[in-house]
Image (cartoon, rainbow, N blue to C red; front, side, top):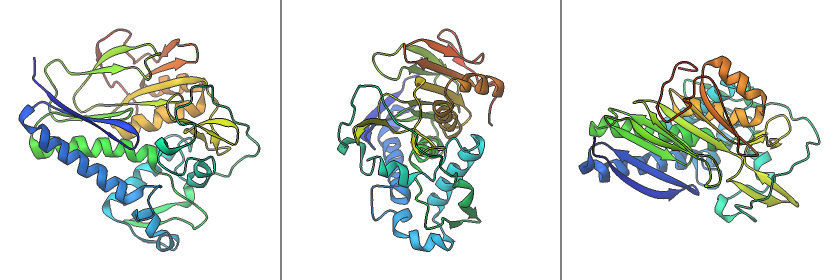
Length: 315
C-alpha cells in the first residue's frame, strides 16, 4: 500500500484538499496549490474589484492582452461552452449577480437553505458566449457582458494545481476543490480512492480513479440561497438566466480533465433527464442522483467499487 499525506482547508466557501504520494512533500504541495488558487482568484474573481477581469473591463471591451492565467481561464470557459452547445455559458455574470449571488457564498441571505429551489422563467435570454473572443491572448469582452468564470475556473485550478505539484515535486498528486478532483503523476498502487457522495443524505459509492483522470460533481443541493422570495441555486439555465429546473440532486462525471468533467456535469443539470442519454452516447462515465435519491448511471460508470476507466468522452 502506498503511503500518502493530505492537507485540507477552506477556500471559495468550499473544502479544498491536496494529497500526495510523497508524505515529506505535503507542505510544498500545499504551497503550490494555494499559489495556483491565488493566481486564479487574482485573475477572475467576481467578488473583488481588484481582480484583473474587473480592473481591466474597459480595456477588454475594445480588446486587450490578458495575463496568461486569465487567458487560460477564458479559453477553458469558451471550450466548455462549445463542448456543451452553450449549456455552460460564461457570460451570465450579470444574471447570477441579479439573483443575489454578488459576494462570497457564505455571506448570502439564507445560504445553505434546505427547501427545494424555485424559479419562474419569464423570458428567453440571448446566448452571448460567441461574442467573447480570445485570439493570441487578446481578449475581447463587449461592455454589455459580465463574465462569470467561477465553475470552470475552479475546475481549471484543480487541473493546473495537480499538474504543477506532480511536475515540481515528482510525485503523484490529487487536488480537490469542492466537487472538482484532478490527479496527476503516479497514482497510489491501489489507485486514488474516491468517495462519490454529494451530501450526507445522498447514496454513496467508492471508486478508484486512475492516474491522470479527473472527476467532478455538480450539485443543486449545496449552493442555495434566498432571493426575492425564491430559493435559488447556482447553476443557471442559459436560456433564461435563472436556476435550472431541478431534476437531479447531483451529477458526477469522470473525464480526462477536471474542466471537461465539470462542463459535462454542469450541463447535465441544465439538460435534466435528457443528459443521461447524451453522456451515454458520448461514452462518458456518469452517475446521476434524482430527487428521491435514486441512482442512474451511464454504461461506462462502474456498478460497484472498482476502477473508473475513461473509456470515451472528450479527450
